[in-house]
Length: 185
Image (cartoon, rainbow, N blue to C red):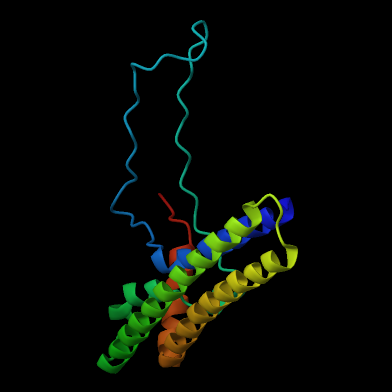
């Protein structure tokens, strides 16, 4: 039974990983990260040893793209660079329609997946779980996740294919420029 709970956890984690690119918004250099002021009224856990403040971590440069990220462009990246790409009115309308259609279907699938996961968790939570029933429920959830990932890939491919070779080259240049660490001095 523990392995089913592990599979459910991994499946849910993969779903969140797959959805993250749609919601991800890159940080801009003009907005510094907000940090909470140190709370001087807090007492250290041990009264004899003061707790030194933890220094902030340095900003790391973005990681270079790997796998599909080398050949695909996040929709948000295309949208953020629409002016630099000189998107035509037809391209903009196409992308807006694709995003709306995909988002609508994604929301439907996400509701179905949440329902399927609730049923699966309920079946696994029982004192005596019917193995085949639980595996069938797991298959249903995994198929929904597969459909969500396929939906995202389809949208990404359609948008990429709507770009001209020059626009794709410009996106590659912009991506490379954004992945280079800023040099000071």
